[in-house]
Length: 350
Image 1 (cartoon, rainbow, N blue to C red):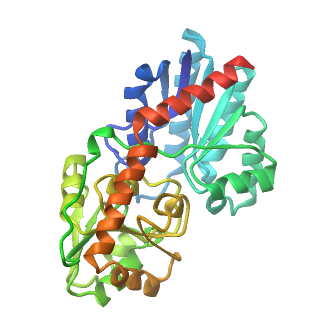
Image 2 (tube, one colour):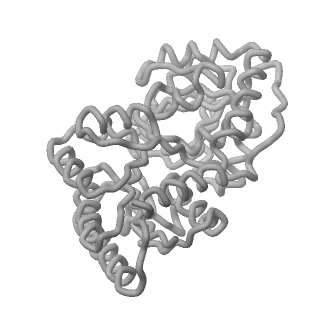
């Protein structure tokens, strides 16, 4: 079976979808299928700095490059399935519709994979319109959370399959040493207001004895604010150093306002960290009420109270063990790649 994957692969960015792509490509042979890639990586400033503003000229260049890669792939090979990792932003959904239309004309079944909480990104009428158009072309839809599945069904009558993101098997540990005191918490991701940085700052002010280690690029907006002294900015780090930060922490904090299925959260769970997360995207599905505390988004007071709720080391120990077990059972690469292969085969049999 031959798959045409349309996704982001980047030598600069190693977070989010770029990491997903690398792991998919590394594991596809073992899962029983081969794959060619049409690279959807950004160009221009945003390719280097994720918090930069989008530029129309760069988006045009990016789109032209994708179509050239797609033309080359369709001309040189035949495919059983096309797997399109779509972006629901205004630029992305229009671009992805154009790509999907060309693939559909070739009679190739399209799997549309949403790496976000769909309802959060469909506030604009034009986005909803193009989402409806692209859904008419797809043979299957993959979502990351229950909320996205409900949205597609209620708004478009479209069925979907919930498939979480995968965690590198080598990150799994048997157990984490739990300290008596909650001394350090960490966050991994873009340090922006919509990722909950404001709530992080407020929680840090309420817990001056706890150190907040933040890994990631700081937006210009948040750089202008004055965080408390117990907030430490570690910047963008190589992945192995991110794991070192996770292992040194007593808990993982993730106050994002929107999310699909967070790889950073899944990796924190794999390293046995109790987690405080907001009730967006797949966060609550992942942590449930066993692996941490789920709080409303944009609620700094609730977020701060959650830190008090995990002070007891016995509570954190139970959360740690539960998180390790869940990742081991549900989120490992081999398990999820086999699910992709099974879903692809269903489309080729029809």
